[in-house]
Each structure stands twice: as structure tokens, then as C-alpha cells.
Length: 252
Ligand code: HEM
Image (cartoon, rainbow, N blue to C red):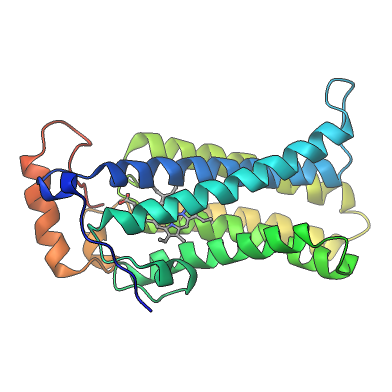
């Protein structure tokens, strides 16, 4: 079943729709919350605490922030479907690579969303499933995060805007610090897995630095990313008619 809703009145008026702004803002908040959730999870498992931040506070925060991240991703998905500018269906939000709009990059969003749902569901069923099953699923959080970041660069209209770039750099920094805090204390005992985790963080940062300039930061990214031709033309006419920076649909 494919559900694609029609454009909003605001979109029909020729300008960008309110849903577009909501998609971008909820996406950015979801990325921040997802980053915070991973960092808090590491603090929790490493039994980090201070008199002001006892363990039960860190544990509770990790749960609440993770839940809020899921809520924001759901809002992000709903607003992107309601926007109607691009043919994005509810199906494409959960079935990876099923979209005709930037299939690979939107598909990464769907993979990340599915992983988040798996993490949330297994955490809710934690007392009913084995600890091993819960723990194994929880490792997926480390995969969910970089996939969401790649989706953000590949799909978002703000990839070339300083605010999203700086936000992403800050999130990469927080994630790198969290992985180091998780892997370094275990290094002597588990050299191979700790080394692999640290190598993965370093490799991901190097990959981003090499890929971004010729990818999402390049002028022809919209075409490269798989934006339907009809939308490429529409985007440039909106961009020239829109008043003020950021009010059109910049196509990175
Ligand atoms: C963990 C899951 C996800 C996270 C953290 C996330 C986060 C983001 C971020 C940060 C952006 C960039 C926004 C900007 O450029 O201002 C973005 C763009 C976008 N995302 Fe997601 N996303 C996720 C999953 C999904 C899914 C499942 C969909 C499917 C409907 C989706 C649809 C979109 C669309 C359409 C855009 C482009 C919005 C624009 O025109 O700028 N996202 N996402």
C-alpha cells in the first residue's frame, strides 16, 4: 500500500510548506536526541555518576531521551509524508529503499528508523526477553547513529548550510567521545573489539571528510542523490522566486 498525500495549501501557493520546515527541524532535533541517547547509554553502562547525577538519574534520562528521539523521528516522518512536495509514502519510511525520491539516502533513514523501533521495542520487553537478546539488539544503536547521519546529509536540504554542518560536527564529536569512553577502559582486556570500535570511529570521520566535498556539499548533489527530474526544475524555480535565504527549497 502506498500512501502519498497531496501538497498543502502553503505548498500550492508556490512557496515552501510549513511541513517542510517541520521536517527539517524535527529531523535536526531527532539527530540531537539520538546522539544524546547513545552518549547517555554509554554513561549508564560505564556506571558513570556524580553526587549531582546519581546513576538512577543517568539511567532515567537515557530512557526518556531515547523515547523522545523516537517521538521526534515519528513526527519527522509524518511531516515529510504530509509535505507532499516529494513523493514520500509511509511505506517508504519503514521499508528501506522503497522510495522514488533519493531512494538510497531516504532508505538509510528508514533503516535507522527500523533500528530505533527494534531498540525501543526490545527495551520495553526487557523483562520478558533474555538479557543476551536485549544486549545484542542494543548494540544496534551504534549502527543506527551513523546511518541516520548519512541519511541527514544525503536527503536534507540543509547539508550545505553552516548550522547543520556545525550541528553534525558537534554530534560526531559527542559520539566519538562516547565510543572512546566505552572502548578505552576495556582496551587491555578486549584489544580486538575495542580497537575495532576506535578504528570505526576514526574511519567514519575520515570517510565523511573525504565524501562530503564531492557529495552532499557539491552543487549537483540533488541530481546525484536521485531527486526526480521534475522536482529538480521545480526546486530551481522556487529558489529564484523565494524571498530571502533559506525560504526556497535549496537543493544541495
Ligand atoms: C533515526 C531516524 C532519522 C533521523 C535521525 C533523521 C534526521 C534527519 C535530519 C537531521 C535531516 C536533515 C534536515 C535538514 O536538512 O534540515 C533529515 C532529512 C530528511 N529526512 Fe530524516 N531522519 C530519520 C529518518 C527518516 C525517515 C524514516 C524518513 C522517511 C520519511 C525521513 C525523511 C526525511 C526527509 C524527506 C528529509 C529531507 C527534508 C528536507 O527537505 O530538507 N527521515 N532527516
